[in-house]
Length: 185
Image (cartoon, rainbow, N blue to C red):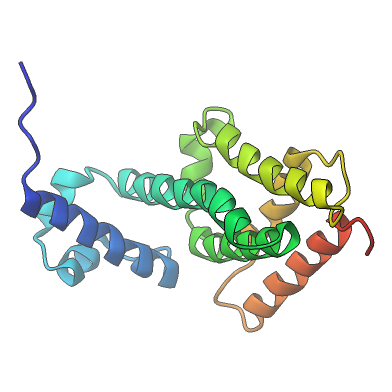
């Protein structure tokens, strides 16, 4: 028996909920599901039909956003020299880190601290693609472990976006990371 296809309006509702939720949770990790539903123009029942729990909604945002970052690495490499592509990609990761702040515990718990995260290997592979391209053109050191870079990036998830100067701090940290990866600092 074939499952019933999802109606267009249901897909539109789902996308609207995700768009509103991304902005609402970025603004406040305690944003209520009721407020998200209202702002998305759907009833709370519709929100719960798509996302039965707050954690389900947060994990769907995580999956969407992390896949976007994975997909961006080769696109940026096709459009920019490797060092510039890496810098632009890291800036997108930093932006994502600001969105993730406050909900990291939910993601961490749901993925068993990353051990069960289906996106871990593809994310590390995206970093590796950027690093190898930079090593090949001589702009980055060769032999860098992409998991080491990921560990460095994890500090971005700890920067409270509500604190004054948080964006500048993230920029400085990214600069330190990039400087450490350059073949010639």
